[in-house]
Length: 417
Picture 1 (cartoon, one colour):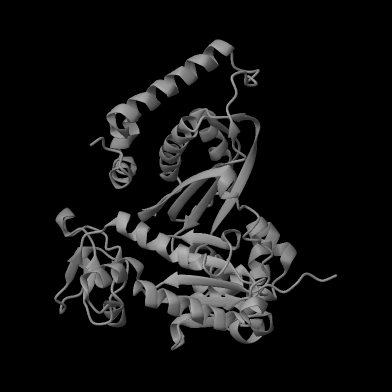
Picture 2 (cartoon, rainbow, N blue to C red):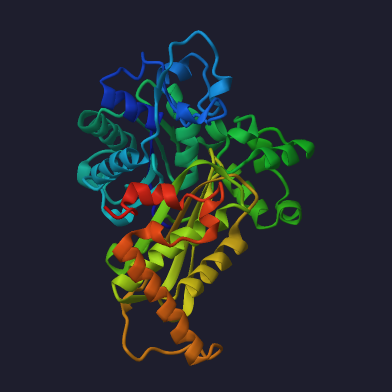
């Protein structure tokens, strides 16, 4: 029996940071020359977002303050990550008015996938009608403008969003199975396609491939030799095929804890492990406060722009709440699946939680004395953080430019009042 055709909606918040700042100031985002950047940091500061008005005038969303074109009376808004997270949570709550939590995959702070397959008959709508309803609801309740892509799988929906939504007066783009040859194959340049970065595009161009159609008709065995596993994905996507399931890596909330960060700039694959360690330090401490242990670790990496990302999980040999063991497990995932692309988001989770018992299974490769010493050290650090604040004792790596721990703690209350 053939699998039921799915309907996926991906919703993106337009110029999210800049739009939030305009709405909070009572400004029209389509008329205000607002940019989100901390001007106090100097002219080399990276701009995080520009208003739709500036974008319509040709001002790119990613540049430095010193690169801003002249001729505009710019309004500078200092980034407020805590506010953006708050607004993002409001949007997710709106999604949950329409679909169950397990049918939502939050892709980034301003973008999420919804599997609406099971809801269309209930609402008596098709995917486009439901997307329109959700977009209008977001606008009415938050003042923010959302755009949407609708397709039969995640890839189709994302391409519909990236390529066709901005051309639609309703901000909704579509790409379904029957549209592959007419709407997907003509796309060029290839870098416009989700999952194809500049380096991959250059390789494909050197092979004489400049359109999605040419990619779709390429020899699969040859592509496996050149690109490895990614070769299969490239050809599948070019034919509109995406078998990934957004539910595969979902960990139910009541049996998991999660922590993540959307970054203010692109991080290299060599910088990201520091962020993973810092997030893991905080999440492991939370696990111990709850007096629980985990049997599964999960990691999601979001690449910059339309370069995609991955989400994978790993089952542990034994349940643990040990910071170092959990970090090593996360790095096993990272080292196996990471590719050399700019990183814009890191999220980790612990799943299959259970209460910590007095007599736990010991690691046979580490002496009981050393395990007890490690745990006592971690518990002592937890107590210091609880009494004096998380910033009282930090790793030396927190002084590196790529560290975000001090900034993140300031957002979530890391300083003791």
